[in-house]
Image (tube, rainbow, N blue to C red; front, top):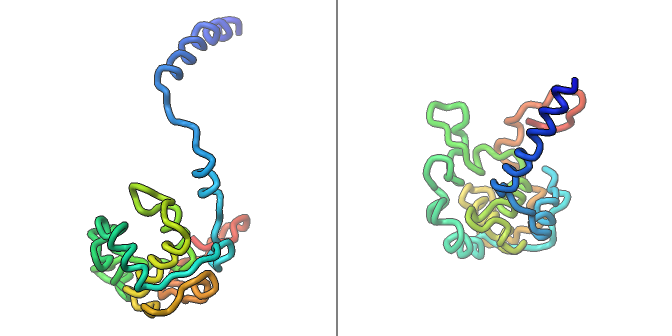
Length: 176
């Protein structure tokens, strides 16, 4: 037993020194924590106030999103956001917002938290609503002149809404 204690006493200073030398990570800014600490439910609870149209979203998308996703959200490989409706389960399936995502509020949440890729969280709520309206419009799920807001986004029925199986674990009450 005393050999283990001696070993710990010898190794502990070396481990502490290694941790200081590596300088791993950094303290998250309060703004980042506050942004990531918000939760949007599949039903839309937690969506903030704001609004936007697909016409407005096209302008934001062209400036902030098209570099990775293409002008019409056709993207490449995993970056495609439009098209593919009805392709799941087929030999050439395409998983996009329109073909794969089960809940429209989740699109808003993802765009808000993770996009644009090199500057996540930099879009204002109105810009996020507009970009989501544009993406939904490209998938034939939203009219380009209609105003998208929290109430309207929560009403949208995605084509793949029933494409996920219920999680059978008794302690989990969500789809997977």
